Image 1 (cartoon, rainbow, N blue to C red):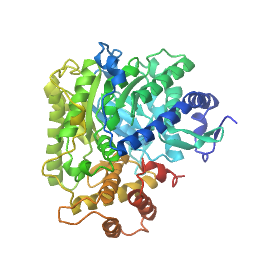
Image 2 (cartoon, helix red, strand yellow):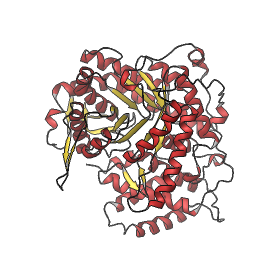
Image 3 (spheres, rainbow, N blue to C red):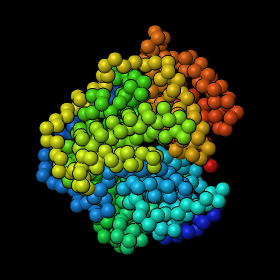
Image 4 (cartoon, rainbow, N blue to C red):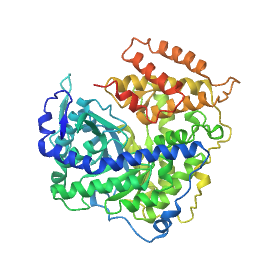
Length: 521
């Protein structure tokens, strides 16, 4: 049957969904999809083991890799300095602002910050193609013109994760992998142009759970580079360590991708979500309000310390976590407090040994840059800071005890509110939503709904003496819906329907985007 596009006609799609581009995507899918499905099945099997009480360990079968003396590929010139990376969806105006923000890197996101409507995917690739060729522009309804500056951030692209399908493109009647179509189209249309311009096809890889999943990406890179007749090693990848299993296989993932590797990133929000998900039935692993789980709590501290040590030992960048604050145009008091916290966070990262960090808004770029410049003092990175004194155990990575923490009604309400608002935004086609002066994406919405399920499922005690229950959730959900104007506003009715399914189901749904995707065009 071959490959067929079933999505609605999008203006300009003929320049993206060409026969040659789709042929590459089809080849990647045919050669790699059976293994992708096997690895996803292994995730489910591993979860069953955890539910039976097994805990994570460092793999005995890869001890030689962890003990070996090896390095990843040398760093390309335009990736040597990554003090500040700004992220955002592949939306035209936001892309231009990000490229022009003064950040070292812009991560164009087809994943957590993008609602994967067919239009968003196709137009996103059009925008990406124009950005690489420096022709991207935008005219606002008010007549304001946006164009790329002469000096712009280095581009990295984040495709969707291994678990997400693309229902509008079928191979032999089955939906294609969203990860492979995003990667294949981005590479086909831009790799040669990027290399000719003195840069390269650079990617961020999300939500990996094992070195075997990293190996699958490496094989995709090799197949695609050979098919397009570009040198092996042209592609460079930064892996987001945003799942608990990945924290136990950082060396191994670096090794599998060593020919194409440039670093690891501490994807803090998804990492917190992953820990909740993996230990969802464990009453002794219940996390408190999201706001109380800071980067200095023991299990988060252990994870970031290990990441820095592992990366620098292998000659790779260690990238810090997201600063999600969006400055308020109306409330300077909010700004003052939030910017002070952001500055403290970035100062800690720089002093710990990170080579750079993430921000969600252009107004945070200079603040973050200054903190890294103070520590690095003219050097592009601090890979030579080996952190050999760090010794992180498996127990430390899984120690969720947080002194003085609690589950509060305010935290419960905030989770319901954020999940409803984010799902409403996502269903409306916007995957990066400003909520309470924070840039919320799918990762933070995942924390919200996962905590609600965990608290209800395990009957968590609230600080006021009540017990989390389905009845409490339903009461608070109705309260928060009223505050948002009622279920007839936007797509809140569907958002509440999805959230109910996620929170009240007897089984934990692996990713909220899987049921929500059925509601998208």
